[in-house]
Image: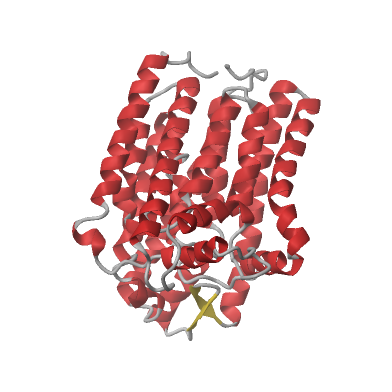
Length: 414
């Protein structure tokens, strides 16, 4: 059973302190060695923003690789400061985009604090961990829009543990419309609602999540069905990305045993080509799906508490990241607001593994990325494998069921 909710004053103070630390962390990422050899996506975002600012319709008048829910993160900076070439990011666009991102980060911290208020346990340590984590991951935080879906995902979790089931599903549906991955939390949300409020409410919440997702997509599907399908198919058809678990094994085999390996650049990333890569990509997808189904099924059979929902949510997101055939550095942003929420000794080990994964990622990205992605450098290949195995260990740690006596379902605390 969840602990007694913390006093509002303590929660507000902790959230305010965490946001202040996060702003300091965000500022620090603009100085020192962090400024070296950056690999940024903001030029692409600026091109999208420019197109929108000039009245062009996404998916119909220009190709876009992201779902429609991501558009506000490109359109708002583009409307504030449009113009310039894709290779030349205008300061106004960059400032507006980064402001949106740190605001999303702040909202994620507030959602974490609200979740911790209900589920109990440590309050300050998880918030400060998440606020300082960008220093461990690096400047990828500054130039990717992933804090937007991450804030929506953790906001949905917070709403669910507070008993605001429809709001929680609405946020998860909106998050899935921005970057698909929050959709892996929807089966957990529906099961949690079913066990605490009954089947009718669960189905109503599911319909709301699907409705919000459809509401974001349908206008663009009506205007440019081919463009929307192209965007989705590009994501579904991505090859084995060089930083994924399957690619890490191939890189190590290449360096140890001389296994033939070729790279290719497509779909906006560096990938591993060849028959073995294709097979491992398929295996990765099957394993990813199997682990997610197991997490959903285990949660549905267990206790309906805020703590189990949080742990299973963290496990689902981590499994989606660790076992996928694509594992870009920004995917680790998704883990920062959810993994520290896990309670007890398991939570401490989980945060330690996440910290290791963040630091190992920054070891090659962005500073040595092309030495890994293009040259398959031996030492970096082992570092990559260590990072990916840390994420696998984290997923297993979070997904492993607790050996506790089953109790009747417990309603969420409002």
